[in-house]
Length: 141
Image (cartoon, rainbow, N blue to C red):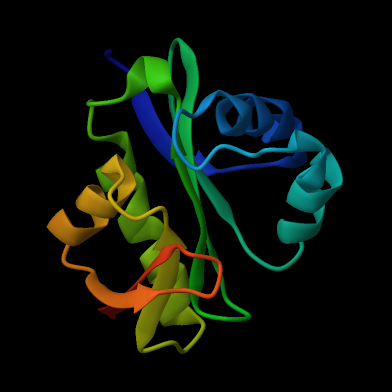
C-alpha cells in the first residue's frame, strides 16, 4: 500500500460503504434493507463519513452523529482487518463530535466481540449493557 488517504465520503462512495457494511463479520445486519443507500444519503446531510482509501479501493469508514454525540459507524472491510484502519479513522469521527460541542462520545457494540476489545484498547470506558443487550461505552473528548 503506497498511496493511502483518509477523506470524506460523497454520494458516489455509498455503494462501497454498503459493500463494507454488508461484509463485516461482527455487528452484522440481520436485514441489510434496514440501512439502504438513502440512510447514508440522509446521514451525509447532517455529518461527514470518513473513509480510508488506497490504490485498491475503499477499505473502511467511520462517522459520528452530531445530533446525539455517538459514533454512528466504524467498519473495516474484513479483507483489510489488522492494518490499523479503524484506529486511523476513529479520531476523525471524534473530532467531528468535538466540533459539534460534545464533551463525551458514546457508542455501543456487541459484548465480548473484537469491537468491544478494540474500543477498550482505545480508552473507551464501559457503561454497562444497553436495553438491546449491547455493551455501552463513553469516552471523554
